[in-house]
Length: 73
Image (cartoon, rainbow, N blue to C red; front, side, top):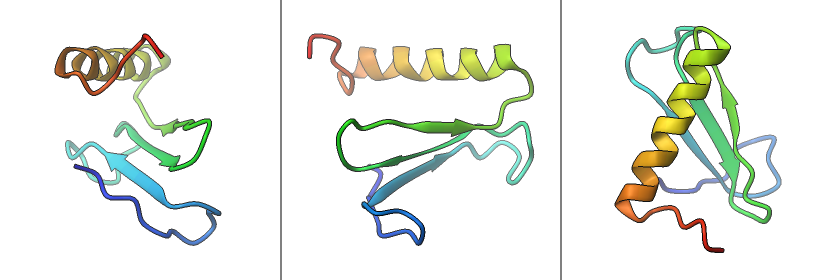
């Protein structure tokens, strides 16, 4: 499980996430999100808008199927 940590430049603890396909490549998807309401996530990367959007949709679908995301709240 991701572990929040104090990252310079953020007021709250942050969880960082990145793919490991091509480290440092501009096509890599990565995201970071402060651990505080409204729990927004900032995504970077993706070869195109479509591939970035598909990556996020597939991640959300997997989280729903695994019970890590609940649309009822």
